Length: 394
Image (cartoon, rainbow, N blue to C red; front, top):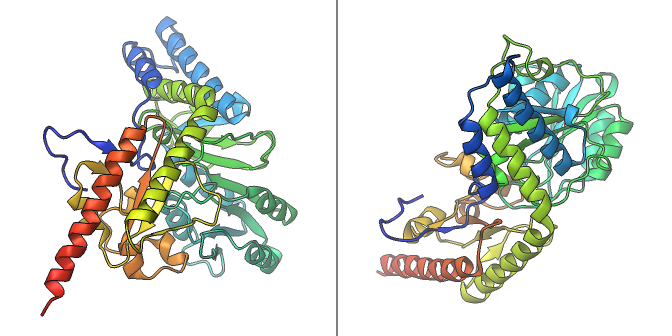
C-alpha cells in the first residue's frame, strides 16, 4: 500500500486486515498497562492482574456463549490455529480442510502432514467460494481405517467475506468420528455466534479483527472433548498447560473490553455496515464499467467487498488512491509474488486475481467514508485505464 500523504485524512476501508482499536479497548488496555502484577503471582498485584484476566475471559465467553473455562488465550489466531491442528492431528487420522482457508490453517496442515501419504485432503469450492459438501462426504468416506482426525473450515473468508454454513459440516464430520475446527477470525464480533448451538470442537480468533489490540487472541476448546494438548511453548503451566509464558494482561484486558463492546453493539453495527456495503457495491457497479463483485451470490460478512477491475492491476489502483486504505487480496499475503489462492480456487484467472481489490468496512466506518472512497476508486480506475489505453496506441 502506498504511504499516506501528509495532511490527507485516511479513508480506512481495511478492517479485515485490522480494525481500529475500540475506545473501550483502548481505555481498558491503558488502565491495565498501569498495573505491575504477574497474573501467576499470589501477592496482591498478581491477584489484581489475575482478576482482570478472569473478567476478560468471561467477557469473551459472553460474546461466544460458552464457558469461560473453555477459553485459552494466545498471541492471536495464527497461534490458535497451530495449537488446534497440531493437537488434533496427534490423535491420528486425516486432516480435511478447504482450498480457501487462511495460510495459518493451510500452511500448518501442509507442514504437519508433510511426507505422510493421503494425510491431508483439501476440499474445492464453487465459483462463489462456497465449500462443496458432496466432496466433504466423499473425503470422509475415503479416509478408511485411518479415519479423519479433524475437519477445519473457516466461518468467514478473509478475502471475500463469504460465509460457511457449518452445521452440515459438523454433522458430517462428527458422524465420521472427526473433530471440527473453525477459523472464526473474521466472524467473531461482527455477527452473532452461539457456541451452545454451534457444536464445533475448536475455534480460533484474534482480538484485532473486532477492535481489540493486536498480538492477542484465543482458542476455544470445548469441554469434554478427548484432545491431548500439544503446546507450542513449553516452560510453564499457564492456560491449563496449553500455552506457557507470562500472560499478556494488557492485551487480554483489551480483548475482553472489545468483546463486550462488540456484543452490546453488534446488531446495530451489522445492520448499518450492511447498508454501507450496499451503497458502495451499487456505486461501484454503476460507475466503474466491467467491475465484478466476487462471492456476490453467497452469504457474506456485512462489510466485505472483493471487487475485480478486469485488466487493471490492483497494485496500480491502490497506488493511485493513497488516501484509501484497502488491500489487494489478503493483507497477510501482501508482498507475495503469487496471486490470491482464494480467487484461484474460485476459478478466477491469475490476471483477474491480480486485478482484485478488497474493501472491508467496520464499526467506525461512516457514510462520508463511503462517499469519499467511492470517488477515489472511480478516479483511480479511470486514470489507470486512460494511461493503459494511451500506452497501447501505436
